[in-house]
Length: 208
Image (cartoon, one colour):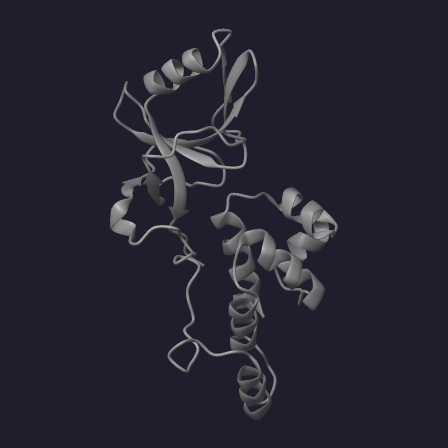
């Protein structure tokens, strides 16, 4: 089961959600969520909620679970036949590194490597893909920056209020940054440009 548990963890990290947030949105205790990512077999109802949360087709998730099943080969094959196959007449298993995207190809995105301490969900050395055309602030998204002082890339979440702009790292390695932006959207845009905002991160390469 360990492979499937790691798969669940990778899906969570791919969409930049922490354990507490996933637990709350799927209706389980934080400790239960941790166990689902470690060794416990999650129930079907949880998988339905989790698949919707991380935007992964439920059938893909069930197929991944079957790959890690201890059931007989005959039972697994019958289970696979009960699910709807792909357009080619068979199942195409996609890895967590190939999430559904609204882009025709990854080549349309800027690809950079994280080289500076970032949000705790984006480790050093991770490769990220950035939509440079998307710079509107969304509290649930992650953003890429090019530090103009040293040329290093880092990632952070953004929170904008009527008077403050905050770069959130949620990490012991880097403190959050807070800027007064009483000038509203115009001033916040200037601050972000000065900080080297590249755009919204839409994909991060993860290994599990």
